[in-house]
Image (tube, one colour):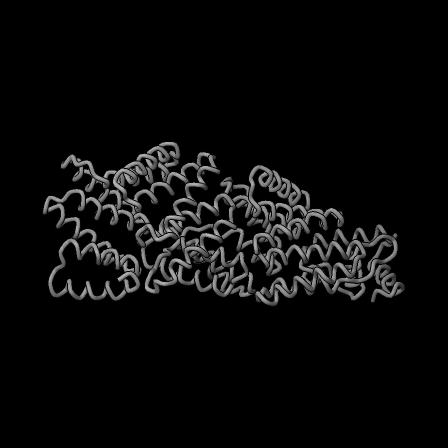
Length: 531
């Protein structure tokens, strides 16, 4: 039956219609239904098994059925029914006053309630007691569940090294086949979520690959539920596996909308919006961000970055300012800040971008996480470039590119190379600029990153020679467009920058060249063969 969960589920359901199943077969049905994603049938089978076992006086086994019923309800976000069944089973155990491993399972649930309530210290202690029950009764499922739970509690308490060690130990037991398949999806999802919270994307990728190998021989197995699928899609997206990521996130969207107010629904639709945005499918991205909002997920920073790609700089700036000012979550804020830097530079608010980049650097300095190092050095490089310090920008951007390559993140590395190419061009290193642009173009074409290809075309086509009197390459671009008779608004649209930024460039051109009008600037451009 190990590789035929769907067939087992179907056969047991048919048999149950002919003659009601006994407790043992109901337990088998509940497991098989859970593993193939038929949650309603699974919950019904656990409830019936509980009732029959309680009637027979087998309190421990009935409580175990109730535990798995509660386990499934919590995973689907059905908190009130879960609380009711938990109280019912605990009362049954208390009435029989029996020393059994099931008491450890309910300690695990008590610990979960503590962690959900923000009391990580109490949760850590309760998880530890549950591990002791599991060890004493030689129950690997309980040991693995509780050990991973204590690992997450320790992360909340700031004891990262010990917490990560416990998470790795739990995952090792899963991939070694020591744990029942029912536990697999929950622990895997939780471990990947923990890796996201501490920005350990390399570990998330490694455990994702290991678990995929474990699941491969079990084609009927549905080990990933809701948020798990979203996390898998995020890992795939980072690695540049965009088609696979889209397939995974669409599976997540289909699964999470089956139940009312599923907690993973917003994240699933947000992930779908991100992939559509990166591929230039702006209408689909807009729809997906709207769905995410309806399911209670803040659609930022993705929606603000979509507005930026659409040339609506003011709307992007207003949206990102709002969320950055209201978000203090340490796991979320760095991702907001890097988008904030990009949008503020486009809005010509370089001081605000500098403040955000400095905050990112401070966060990254306090945590040993390659992801944070990569995003912070990218932000710093982008700000240096906006401030006119091309050499400092080159240094920071090449550090960021190296960090992204270590993370096997081709898209992010390519974005670094675009800005590095612009910086090289500012330093009159046209060969270096061409190499950076060509490398980035190859990645964007392979991924289908249409908006980035358009921005790259704009950046690389502006490789005009440095003019006299100290004009930068960007100022030469603006001067050429002024000479072509374009307005500031039109230039802003062509270069994907704000009108305010164009006006600043025009002012700098007039100052450097000693000019006072657009007609004089046009004459200069013709005299110096820029047009």
